Image (cartoon, rainbow, N blue to C red; front, side):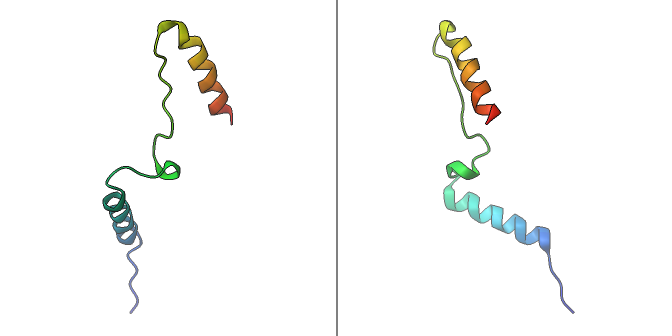
Length: 57
């Protein structure tokens, strides 16, 4: 009899990654890869343009 626990092994793999990186995932694995924060109201339009450019790629 052969038994494969597909989701159990996936959950263990994710657990190992979380422990290994201590929550600070590498760039390619991070759920949020960039955050654009305008430092003043006058930069909001530029920040929006940058966001649109990045999302379009």
